[in-house]
Length: 115
Length: 111
Image 1 (cartoon, rainbow over the protein chains, first blue to last red):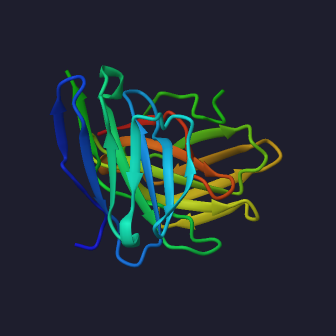
Image 2: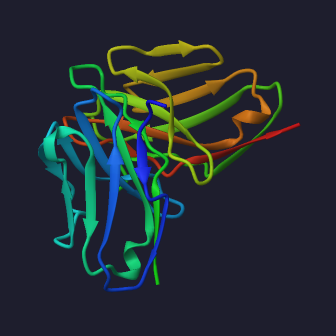
Image 3: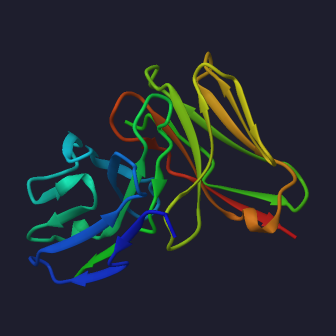
């Protein structure tokens, strides 16, 4: 399967704990995006990588959130000192670089529950 | 301030008929629009897209129409099938950052 994969699919944690999610994009896709989706809402953009460079961050991405994409391949999203408001589906998407190729392909998501 | 709006939270259509899902946007800088379909507990699946230089794009049973002057786009599905029952999201791109999504429309295909 050559689609976007995300691990874990589900994560339950206690408030105050740190969590880390992983995303493996489609091979040869230069761009990688993280989104968050809460109940009744559409996905909301968090951050974006072009290869290993993090080029854009949403104001939704507080200081407790950090994302990396070492070597321009997989990416990790870490949330420190989790809060109940962080409970959401975290989605990763990838797209090839280049003008007019902005179709983003999404992974299955990681559902985070903070107790 | 919602830049992409899907004003119908749900839509019920009889199998075999046409489904029309609507989307309005406010940001004139949006230049690329996409529709995604989402089943519960899965990520959004890309359906069809349209560039702002076009007014129509067709792919099988799916057609997207763009009216730039009205800042409105619509997705037509014909004929509607039971497997089309899902939440449909309209999304827009403006610049290099991520997509802006609407809140979605839950399409229910009645047998």
